[in-house]
Length: 242
Image (cartoon, one colour):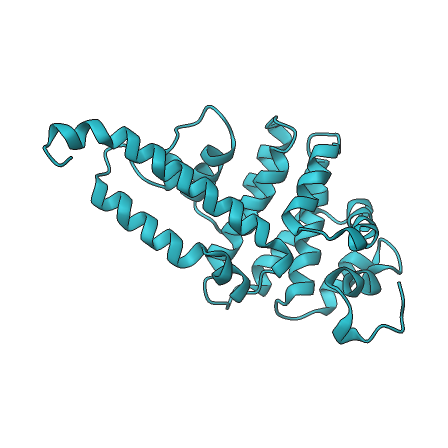
């Protein structure tokens, strides 16, 4: 890393690497010294959780690493820096619980903290399912993170339904009951769009590099919404509303 680059002109990856390049033990110590939540603190905590989740099933696969890179939209000229940051976090011996608590604690007094933490858990589900298999170790990891984040069991089930084949789709994904009507479905969509648009997530402090995650989250919701509409269509025709 070029130490002559002014801090204001350094990329996110250069800034993070400059903080933790002293060794794997620096990853935890850097976060212990940082107060509040900014893009660097958020990114280090998320990267550490991602790297540790990738080991939860006993093997770090290329698909999981590739998903991490997709979430952060790493430009080609930053791939080496990003890979170095990921490896330092992967080698770190601190338990994942520390990083989950750091993220939850730093966001505790932030507006829309729960929505932001739900987005983080959503990203971790993306990584867990990158290899197409949902391992019991990954499920236990994600449940523990959800508990530390104080997310409800309903949120966990909704995200699991969104990512893991075989669960009640699309209603659980939408956080609704199968008996929900069109008005409830439409209201749920409006509320989701109001709090989960990519621009809103960046405004809450998520790094712009994670906009791909926001886009994927929106696409998954829209797919479930369209499927729910298809399932409601027969009842709507029967009721004379179509």
